[in-house]
Image (tube, rainbow, N blue to C red; front, side, top):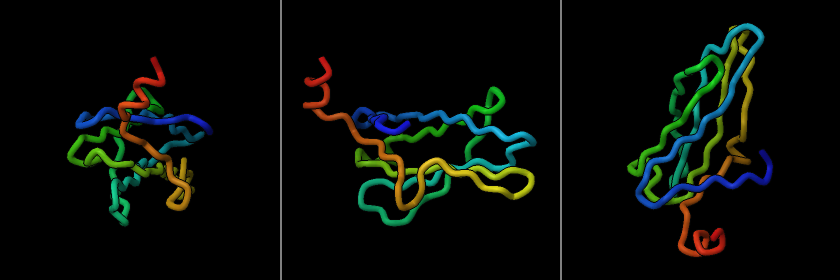
Amino acid sequence: APGTEFTYRKNEPFQISVRISDDHRVVTAIANLRSGSTIEYREIPLAGSDGDSYTLSVGADLHGNGVVHLFFEARDVSGHVGRLGSMSEPIEVKRKGLFDRIRRK
């Protein structure tokens, strides 16, 4: 949602769940992710659970405690593609900092 801030704790994994649905069937769902100064996005297939819920799990080895940029893509049986975020306007996930914790208390 616009204005939503996603954060994670230093050296800890994080998860983001998305709801992807289609009136027929979702064939593929992937997350495209890059972190830190990496230029290329990495495709990560998402496995569905509970019908239309898909979860992306990102470990510290993948986020490297840097800013994570990501977007989601899903394809239906007709080949139509839907996206949440994009390569040019990705969703950002930032590491929580000391001042973030102080401000929220």
